Length: 251
Image (cartoon, rainbow, N blue to C red; front, side, top):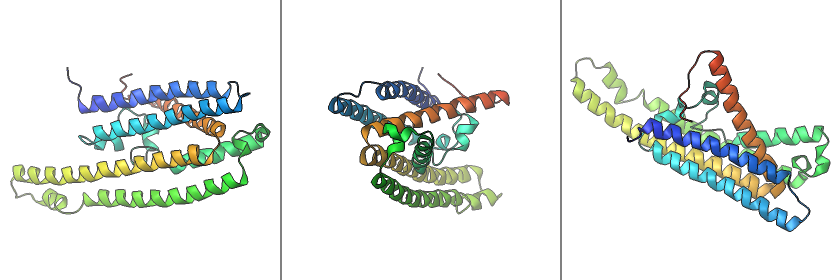
């Protein structure tokens, strides 16, 4: 039996979350592995980083392919907990959240005295300048995309949708045809916006883990980001269960 669009989208997400668990295990194993041979260690870490980044690209590509036929669910997905949904920005996390998480982890490790272990707390002054510059750049890009989203949302109250909704005398079939055409155009623009947001998410992550952080720092950061993502997933499920809310789950 052929899967519906909703089932394909939900399964894509569930497979992605399972991959996060798998990658987290691999990242933690790499962090606690043997780093005595610096060159071999660097090669292993870079391969792992590249794999994580490629998986992110593959997931975004697959998701955007599915969004082309039905994009609305990505802005209010029923396969996510309500907590996850409340944190969405154009179908995913804000790219600047990567940087906020990095700042938080650096601060925690400095407070704990772990900076002596050359992990994230050991970022250099040059790295901090690059991180600060990236954050400023990404926030500007986010603002541009947020403005586009606002414009798309406002379009729904513009012609011809608003006039059709207010016209009680026109033929219903004709109204539906015009409305469907307008909504199809709106969906096409929304898919493009989702693609732009994903491109920004990928670019931000790539700049951090390949352009700024050392391989070990990048693996530490990726592990922290996946831990957080999986925790939000679990916390959201528990809270939904507590409040009697059901979430679509094909896992």
